[in-house]
Image (tube, rainbow, N blue to C red; front, side):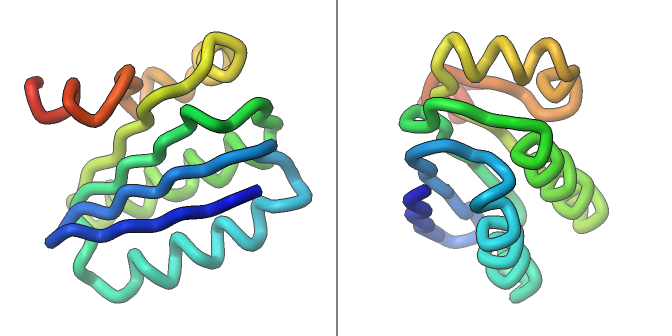
Length: 110
């Protein structure tokens, strides 16, 4: 799994590539929490465009970061999920918590 983080002001964009499964979730959780805990993140955007698979541990990381952002009065969005990944996000109900968008531009326009 490749993790690319970019922060602009209070927005953290995290672009992931590969499989989001139990082999990488601890590292991802730690990296995200370290950045969020610095206290300057109000919007978290997770880009799943290059994620080919997500399992329950990956869903857990997403839901956990959503709860963390909500507790901090922040917002979280998921962008770019392929059809197969989006299907898992919808079946699990994650899409009812975290809004799904095709790309970052859609977030700005809404």
